[in-house]
Amino acid sequence: MNVQRGKLVSGGRLQIPADVRKLLGLKDGDSVTMEVVDGRLHVRPYRDIIAEIQTKMKAYLGPGVTGQSIVDELIADRRAEAERE
Image (cartoon, rainbow, N blue to C red; front, side):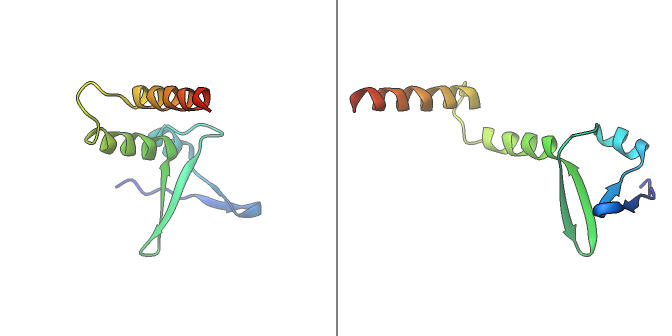
């Protein structure tokens, strides 16, 4: 494991070394998740969490069904319901 030294700066902000940001694919303004596990801080790009959830949810979708098609179906249902009212 490549251990890097960061720094806590004003306002409680954590300064992450450039090579660590590059390794994680982080750019200024990117969102991250932080979790303390057994006294250690785990930092992960938020996009990785979303991708992990999407991968897990695919197991519950039928063949040929995408997340976008489910959203489209929900929108169509809501519109039809609004027209009936």
